[in-house]
Length: 286
Image 1 (cartoon, rainbow, N blue to C red):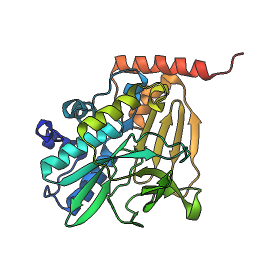
Image 2 (image 1 turned 120 degrees about the vertical axis):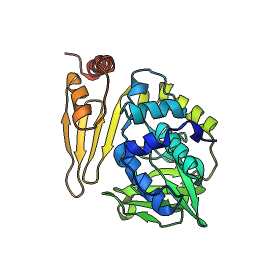
Image 3 (image 1 turned 45 degrees about the vertical axis):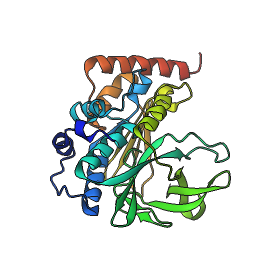
């Protein structure tokens, strides 16, 4: 179903620098998730530059594995799904509603892709496409936590939207007991065609934040960098974030040096031009 026959599994695992066991076990799943999140990047540049974002396995593999570019949740999840399918894992795809910055009374569309993996009568949430993603699977039980990375996550069964119950992924924040809801979901199975529809919305719709501005993320075990248009922020566990503004022509080098994202000269020039236009539109008139 997830086109694993089109995946070059050896090339994918080499890109992750993964040389461990390939048996479909929890240990393998843990190691693969950690390797994927740390090795592959997250960005929305193709949407911002008004390019078509394809999520078929050959296109995603070429972009993330061979060309060293980043992608967002749909790209990461279909790539990981193809790898899990090739390795013999059993799983179900789901879609989540991102809650950060949203009012639960007016929910956002379910446009975040994730997987639920079945192993030995236990189920594990695998979220490798958020950018700042958990470095390990989270067991799908109320109160389960992920402590395997620089920032913890909490999974709760609770009311999520309009009185309906479902799962909520919490991250550290300003909410009750120091947690805030990051995304919510129900266990409604999703298929490649469902992700194709969601991807079309986030990559083309005028209200999609991916279209109106570029966003980049890189998570490491000791820091988390984001580039929101021209605002570069670095966060480290236990420290205050550091934010600075960069100029449009500085972005390609920053992407290479800090985010490990490579663009060809033509793409870099287009990005600089679009960022210059965006900056001019946001700047107040003299």
